Length: 117
Image (cartoon, rainbow, N blue to C red):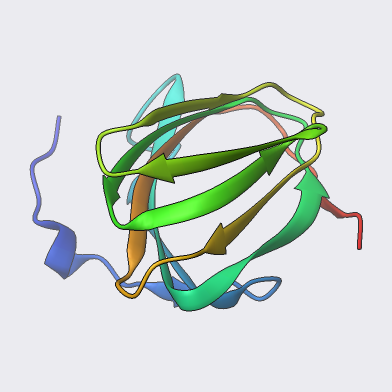
């Protein structure tokens, strides 16, 4: 069991992204089944089209963005919940004038990220 404040956790730049950082709030070593991550994408920032070997459960904390999942594009905002199945291509683009922030939970299984662009 652990309790900590998110400001105590280092935010790292996402190499494949533009204007995007990640914080691993609950790493696999602490959570036996899922890791919890927080992503922040600055205005105009985002992530290229890619796939993962694990599913994503996401909750939007702030801002707005377009998210492509498979062949569909969605407009998401604060309070929206997003599910991305394993292996499905997806991408993100912050379309607002404030940071787009979301929590992303992933199972603690081996994952390979493949950039498709």
